[in-house]
Image (tube, rainbow over all chains, first blue to last red):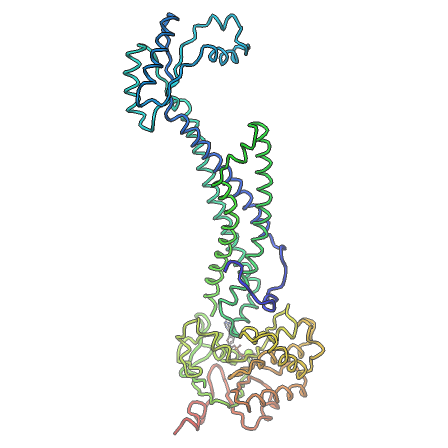
Length: 301
Length: 231
Ligand SMILES: Nc1ncnc2c1ncn2[C@@H]1O[C@H](COP(=O)(O)OP(=O)(O)OP(=O)(O)O)[C@@H](O)[C@H]1O
Ligand SMILES: [Mg+2]
């Protein structure tokens, strides 16, 4: 069906000039780009989802009361009160040391022993993770709770500042998906042009075959086989190059993030998709060639 | 066998190349088609071997209407017709043997069943030692013999030959004509377009079809209403 079986003696009807034309090479390039775009799309959409779910239900309450003792009391009370609420998954007061360490990175003393840093009036922070998805309802309840326990404190949803980043990554993933689609169309167009060119080149042979009683099916199988094999070479080549590039990127990434994080970051579904793409491409090429050939042959008596 | 009734053929918008062609070919008969160059002999044969549908009129082959026959049924009919083309049309990258074997292979004959007949045919046309030669390396006459061998190898019911002896010496021409005659005796209906008067005189019972400016001369009406059909 994909690469039709054709008797050896019939194969000779088409002169053997494999890999001479540009088709396998163009297909190889398109396949490589398709796989890279698909990998980028899968990776980006996975990280967009990861960021999205990480930030969706998290807020930080910032208590800026001037008196440091009251500030600490309010923070402790809010943490306790919040933790007791059914809509809160977890509530955590951010340690002063932790804050100073973070600030220290900006002030140039990671140990946090800078006198200026120590004199800074740092706010007290409470990180709160909501249960489930219903953020607007939970926000109202939290606002009431904060008003009672720590009047004047600010509630900062993480989605507010990380949201645009997640959305940007999400759009990039969609663009990558669009590129996969466009390159698939371009590949199909290459196959159609190849099939038409083959028919043109071998028109005399085809006419002859028709006149001695060959069916469209017989002729189509002959050409479909050749085109499917040629494109399969291109697809294999493109896939190997793409795999090499992806593994190289993954290996570099692994150096940054430690472990096999990068290769694993495409996930099993992502890898399955990438493996399926070349096979789908071969099938698509063969079927496109077949339809083109049958349609063209119909125009000859 | 073959029935044309009021057939006309035009290429594009020009005037008709063939006009009001009516005849009735009898099974097992031998016909010569003659006429000046450009009279439309090749065009008429093209309709016979199903390379061309008529612009008007009725064409019946083996008892079936061909004008409205759906495409998928044509290959089956074509396999019952052998054709020798005026320009041979051998497949250039196939050897003489493979060119001759082509109709059998297309018809699905197995390799072991076809190697015998193809070998015999090759030696019969005197090309036994050139079986693996490509057409380009054969002389015009040798190519013509391969073309004829290809046309007759599958024992067609109808053999159509367009100037089949144009490129061979008189002796080979007679030999090839003998082949047509032999096939004809086995029941094949033969139609040969030719200018060669010697050839025509050789076959005793052959009937003449003369084309003149796209019209078929049929003074006695014998082509349209053959004696056997008259009753
Ligand atoms: N494919 C075509 N398109 C347009 N005109 C054609 C085509 N084939 C043939 N003709 C015209 O039809 C007429 C008859 O041509 P045809 O080839 O049938 O003649 P012929 O009798 O076989 O001649 P010859 O003896 O030289 O082979 C000619 O005037 C020719 O120009
Ligand atoms: Mg002619």
